[in-house]
Structure formats: structure tokens, C-alpha cells
Amino acid sequence: MRTRRLIAGAAIVAAFASGGAGLQDPIDRIRDADIKADLFTLAGDAMRGREAGTLDEMTASAWVAERARDAGLRPAGDNGTYFQFFPLERFRVSSGSTVTLDGKALRMGRDVVSDAIVLANVDAPVTVAADGKVEGLAVKDRVLVVRYAPADPAAQDAGPRTQAALRVWLRGIQNTIAASAPAAIVAIVPDAAAEQWRRVSVQFPRGTYGLDPDGTAEPRVPPRGAPLLYVRESALAAPIRTDARLVASIFTESFTYPSVNVVATVPGRDARLASEYVLFSAHQDHDGERFPVNGDDIWNGADDNATTAVALLAIGRAMAAQPGRRSALFVWHGAEERGLMGSRWYVKHPTVPLTSIVACLNGDMMGRNDPTTAALLGALPPHRNSPELVQIALDANKAVSQFAVDSSWDDPQHREGWYYRSDHLPYARAGVPALFFTTLLHADYHTPFDNPDRIDIAKLTKMTRWMYATGRAVAEADKAPAVDPAFKLERCRDSTGNYCGGG
Ligand SMILES: [Zn+2]
Image 1 (cartoon, rainbow, N blue to C red):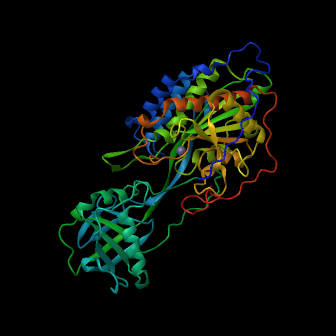
Image 2 (cartoon, rainbow, N blue to C red):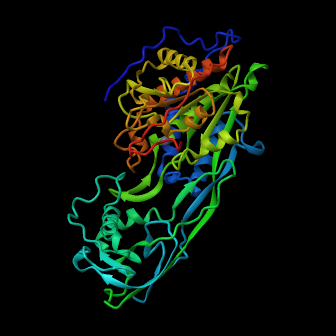
Image 3 (cartoon, rainbow, N blue to C red):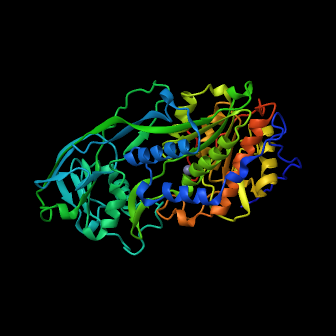
């Protein structure tokens, strides 16, 4: 991977150059000990991974708001509170769907799960594939039943982020016999493959997540199709008889479930500039409780993104100790992991005028990798929408954190499409000068091993001070950083080959 280094500007951050004579910069209030204590709480097992669409995200968000109040921040959400609730649009197979296989009624979500979100009514005889062989079977309008028998049980999944081997296997069977148009395909999952069962069933209650910030989405029409079902073998009374039938009524449900942005402010001290805001941005959610890996089923998301969530608390303490000329705005976005939903919502429903936000300083994953390097996304075209803001950030780095800045991930050809994967994106699209502070990917990303004891606290503190010093300089400057009028985001591809950023 090519690494480009940006040359930091020669200017020193003049935090209080204008209108702040004699004021002391409270950057020393950003301390390792506070950051560590907050991090171990927010990323601790008691928060259960803070998943959007569960009460755990609410627990974490209430904690963040409480800590923001302790830090001296004022509420800036809806109705004088720290909160801005918004609806996640949920869509999934209903657990009320009925499935009876060979006379045995199975509980949807517990004994049987559906792979795809389809509507289906099935009443058809089964064909049991002997020894798992499906080629050449005549299964038109019949139900193919095949028992999961991995070729090599030792070589199952390459890692927690890969597709479950069971799903890959069943999709392969589906492709093999698609032309013969079966009424349904049922995979029998033996108890010996319980780990695979957990990996596919973990998705069932989640379904899919959507957002309708404009309130204009068309009603969701569930597709009809031949269902793909996984059945726990131990839920069956006996081996399936040759004259067995599958009787199933599978239906879907859509509903909304709340997520929440936590919003707070430190009002500016300059009567004229206080109506403008420097936004410090993070997300507090992560991936929740999923399947266990090495016995750990809590995906704590310490780096992603408890690091920046607690960094904002530390920045808040420093800002509250000495307000800037401009106001500071803090938004902990909900449901980022479900598709930047909190930030997409906030940009459409801002609690201060969007045009009064003069800069969005977003952080995501700020506590891992080489202690001397860090990345600043949005620093190079085509992602750079404010050269002035970039220069302020580079000067702040030189003054307070001295990271070697890796800008290679700003390359639009970079395979990760990293710029498109955090909460600054909706702000940049809306014309707000925006930067993304990060220490980039690592092997524990989106696994149960992203734990607080793996965070480099000293590095996180330096990243926090860098974000703070950048925001402080913006807050104190006579003029807000200009937006590049020629800024236009190019589409990119993410690591899965899909165009990223939602288009
Ligand atoms: Zn993240």
C-alpha cells in the first residue's frame, strides 16, 4: 500500500489569537486517566456492544448524556433534552411464521430460521437428498431437504467477518438446483454444527434496517419466493420420513424502532460568533451481542467507536472550561453501524441551522496501530471540501500531536473506500467543511476482540487533543473555513466491490 505523507504547515495553532488575549488554553484537561475510565465503561461488557435497534444502544446513549452533563455541556437535542430520537425502519421475517416439517411444528427464530426475507406459502412433499447429493434430483414443486455435512469441518470460517460456511454451502446448493424450481430448500443443521447455527440465526431478529429522513419512502413490498430454511436437527422428533411434507406460511413484518443522537453544546463567548458552531462528531453504537468467537459473544466496539465517543467527552470538558468564540456542538450519532443513520437523520433534521455549522470534525476508530501515525480523511481531492480546514488541522497536528499523517486512504481508488464509511459523509454532502480523524483498520475490527484493553490510551489522548486543537482554532478564528465550491464527491467502491456511500 502506497503511503503519502502530507507536509504539515509551518504555522503554529494560534488558538486564542483573536479576541482571547490572556486566556489559557485548557488542552491539559484532556487527560489519559479520564479517557481510560470512560472508555472502559462505554466499551465494557455491561454495555453489551451498544447495538442500534436494541435497548443497549439506549443504555449507552443515556450514559453518554449523563457524562456530557457532568462535563458541563448543555443539552442541544429536541425539546431541551440531550436526545434526538429517530425511527429505524425495520424489516424481517415474522417470528409468527409457521413451519411444520414431517408433522413437527417448529418455532420460527428458535428451531427454524429463514435465510431470505420472502413471503411464501408452501404445502409440498419433500425429497431428502441422500448423502447430501443434490445434482440431478427432480425437485420441481417439491421441498429439497439436505443435511449439512461440511466437506472439511476443521476448515470452517476464516474469521468472524466472513460469511458463515453454512450459508455459503446452502447458497451453493440453491444455485445448483435453481433451474429445477423447488418449492423450498431446507437445510438440517446437526447439533455438531451448533456454531454454524448461531452464525446464521444471529441475523434473524435483526432483519434489515432502513431510514426515511424525508418521510417519502414507498411502502415496503416483500418479495415472494422459494424459502431457504435452516432447521436445528435436535428440534425434529425423528429422521424425516420419505413421505413427509413441509407446510409453511412465512410472512414478513415491518415496524419502526427508535435510535437516538445525543446532542450537546458549549455556547460561544463571542456574542456575534456564538450563533456559529464547530461540530465534534462520533458514533456511540456498535454491533451488540452476536455469535461467540473463542467464547466471547459481545462485540464491544472499543476502538469502533467508544474511542471517539469518550474523546468527545474529554473535548467537552476542555471546551466547557474555556468556551470558544464560536459555540461547540457535540453529536454522538446513533445507528452508524446500520448505515450512517444518525448522521443522515441529523443533516435532514438539524437542531441548529445546518448553515451555522462551520466545520464537522468527525472521529471513528482513534486508538490503534502505530503510535506515531494517524490518518486525516478529507485532506486530499476528491474528498477535500475545505483546503482551509485541512490546513488548520495539519497545523494543529504539528502543534499538539506530531503524527505522521497517512493520507493514502484518501485515494479514491483505495479498496476500502474508507472516506465513505463514517458520519462526516452526510455533512460533507450537505456542504459542511468536514474531516475524518482515524487511526484506521486492524485485525480486531468488527470482531469480539475489539476490546478496551487493546486500546493505546496515550495515542487516543493525542488524537483527542488533535481534534480539540483543530476545533479550538476554528472556534477562535475571525473567519470560518471556506468550502471549496468545486467539491464534488466521486463514487467509489468498497471492499465488497459495491459502490459505497449509498449514492
Ligand atoms: Zn465506526
